[in-house]
Image (cartoon, rainbow, N blue to C red; front, top):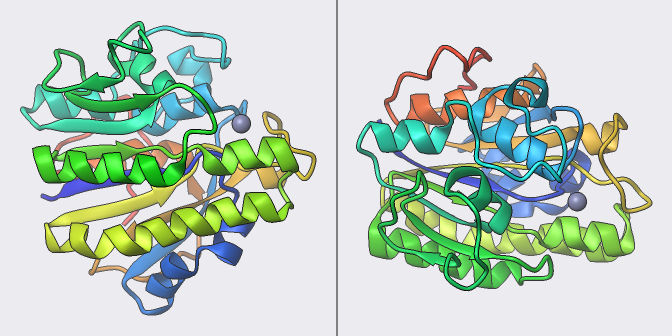
Length: 266
Ligand SMILES: [Zn+2]
């Protein structure tokens, strides 16, 4: 069993990841990481996809069918399963993640959570989309150093924000992806030394015109990197986004609940 960090880069499409994430692609080339092409759920929207990534079921099943369905998750998920097993959970993420797993979000009182009663035990949450990714990565590293969580979700918004502002083929969007890759290049070596296994993926991609939600390949295909000494290279088969949750739990040494039926990515 291992401690797991899941980096969910909001709005990072598959082709942009390969083109811009030189550190992660270098790990793939060296055989220290394995990369899958992954297909997002539909609608290819943030809140439905967050819930699918973290519960392993489709929006039709978990019921978070729109960004405007704002309520607690009602199906078994990674945070709740880990907490029930006595694991320490943490997140540095957008406030919608807190709304899904901790409850109604007050932008002042709920932005910092230390040993809270919700499924996310330790949290740092932001509300505004332009919150700088580098600030978020520092907050995430603080959670690692201070609480050594067994499961940590890191959720930067820079790609999605720049994609909406400037389009999915803009230099601003591509630069946001490169900046996340560079932040990871400075953090992942120390996390691996501390015993963490790191996964990097996205909720959905981004259209040329700064939009997502539908079925275009550029919005449905996202990367999934497993940075893990035992595996490496490029996966031959396409992966399903519903595989993320059972893969995380299995890496932590926990048995996924029956609702998480998609194959483990290893
Ligand atoms: Zn978006």
